[in-house]
Length: 78
Image (cartoon, rainbow, N blue to C red):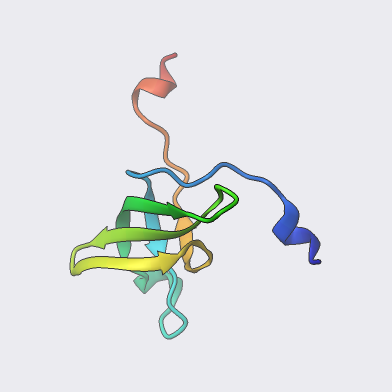
């Protein structure tokens, strides 16, 4: 089994901002979206999400997303 798939990280939460990776465009042109709902697998690890963009809602695997490392405004002061 490949080592990189065995690393445990935090599951993606609804409300997170992501970029939808597309093979046909450059990263500067990837659409921006917000996660609406998550679909965990039998092992409770999220593998598929619904993402709302300016053009609709899409269901995508998390391997085709780039999570934006944003922090809430309140977390800066606590």
